[in-house]
Length: 264
Image (cartoon, rainbow, N blue to C red; front, side, top):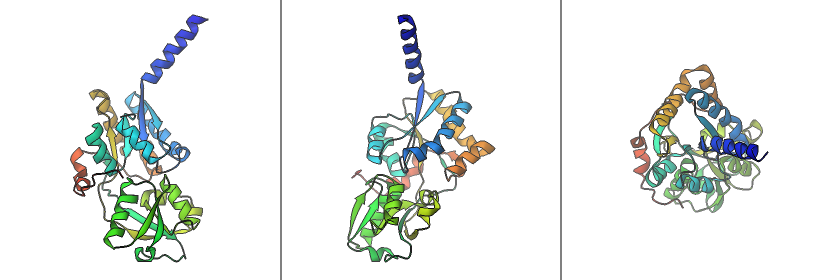
């Protein structure tokens, strides 16, 4: 009996040690993310022969801490996070969506009082987190350029932003078109986009330097080939993405040029 317990523990440890954690930025609830990303992890596992498992965090600040400590072997992160954690934690770019740029949007309640950023003076505006690049950083910068005084409120995810604006708790909220388009109709139909920011290089699929070179190549190739296969293409479509292409660290120089130095 004791031998069986020891053997089971050894097997369990071996399986755990062989896992490659794919960390997804928590723009939505863990439940909603898992529905879309677990099949992606299963697909990549089959294509690479590696044990790739879904992971996320309860909120974006926790996700940032896990990036800093290299908890994730693969990570899907926003452009600003990539610039920061490429430098801090040596994450390396693997892929990004082809022919795609990211921009922030501000949404308000449809048929409400707020129709443009100018209407938001001295109002409370919801954002996912201080370091959400397009949804928060770009929108806050645009409002400040227009000398609009506002109070930022951070609510942990894009979906939380949209729900709180739909309920009328905040005058407006920051997000991106991908997460807005992925909303259920009952929430999305209550909202309207009142502002869009400039566009930048989109989210990065990045790899930890702790991975061996063979695994890195397998993962990068599998990501890029997803858009070439019907099943992979469908999985990307469910994420609101088109085909992926190979990325280099320099692709995010447009974000670096913004000279955003601090997470807070």
